[in-house]
Image (cartoon, rainbow, N blue to C red; front, side):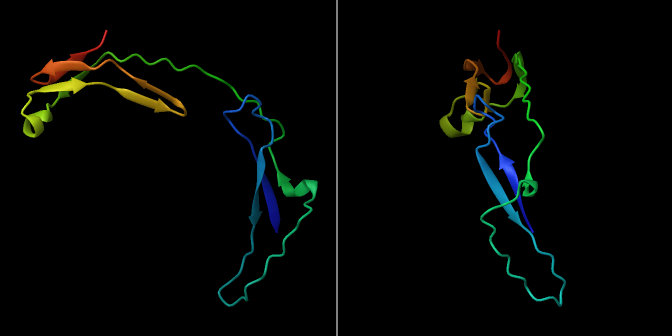
Length: 114
């Protein structure tokens, strides 16, 4: 049995555009069955292609506000003899990378971003 799954690029402008196919070839054999050679099918029928009837991506916005960090332990003391922290938050989502301003806090503890 051959089935083809439709692939699309979620980051393209036209999300519903078919960008490729993933071919699945499946055989089911029991413990005493002989292996069956799966023959290639160069011309699949339309019913062999598994695709959603219509792809409608929905877009949402995510707002993130970093207020602060608490109970932050200064880890640099043993490495470089510095009893402070340089705290920041880094966020990666798909191709977007963001980082807060670096806040230096003596003695560790609490950090606040405005």
